[in-house]
Length: 379
Ligand SMILES: Nc1nc2c(ncn2[C@@H]2O[C@H](COP(=O)(O)OP(=O)(O)OP(=O)(O)O)[C@@H](O)[C@H]2O)c(=O)[nH]1
Image 1 (cartoon, protein in one colour):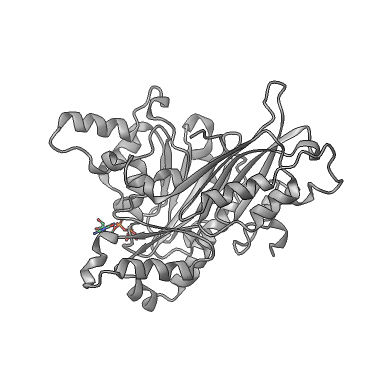
Image 2 (cartoon, rainbow, N blue to C red):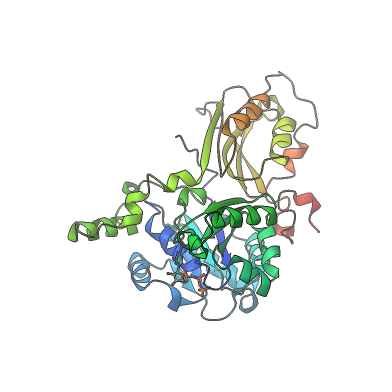
């Protein structure tokens, strides 16, 4: 699948939240081990909780992990302090492709998302709020912590974890029941089941091929080496990577030499279906803006366009990749196709809708997460 990059060297910052013991650290470790050639910078609350060998490797690879010590990230850290950490991880010399902030089990995810959106780092872009829930403890956790429902409503992606244990209740359909219930509590989030946090990292960021990391060992390399050393104990998750992990999401590549009509594309984006978690790529708006192509980045309800001047040798194309869980790729392709338009002239105001989502116009003002998609409607 061709994967256009989602803008000039942007580094998505993923907020990983979930109640105590739901599996956040397990998921982060999984990402660290399956990121291919992509390098993850981690900001964690509690050093002690991270798998020791992953930390050791992170240390060996450089300064790619920041610990905020014990305590609650959203209370203990102010925006400028977090921004300092983001600045450190986002500097080009760190070579980091994605930053994951693992919140303590009690953190208010909304506060963390607010802090990421308020970041003044030009390369940093919001990468989504991932909420991990324990499928087995789901009912009990909701009872004890009614705020869980609010957290789910804010999430862009919900990982229903510990599905390996759902049968323990004796009910065969327990996993399905929890998944359905979670769906009803989210507002358009993608929901993926997982055991031991084994989601496909491509849901969250673009995994570079392992070979692309020159002069540094990736976690995958180290594991491969480990497998060599111990052929009787291959790493199970890595071998499963190309089989069941990819079943967790659907993706669609759309390419068109006919420009997109800005109003129609906005109409499509404003009504994008539940489960369509990420959109990335470049858009050609033809006569509506002949000078620029628009990098597009959407995660959950968050949407931004980044205009960049066309270079002389660029082929005028729209190239988009859509990633989600439970999405109807055929219908989406049709809708995108219907959004193309080769009218030689655009009406004067056709780009207004797009420009509302251009960074800088609004990002410094961003305050709340309730309406991430529409910067104008933020308080
Ligand atoms: N059976 C089972 N156990 C899991 C799964 N995911 C995580 N665990 C276990 O659940 C426990 C808690 O997992 P963590 O990843 O530490 O959870 P956490 O959300 O980071 O926990 P806190 O840091 O306390 O908030 C550990 O013993 C994990 O091994 C899973 O999918 N299935």
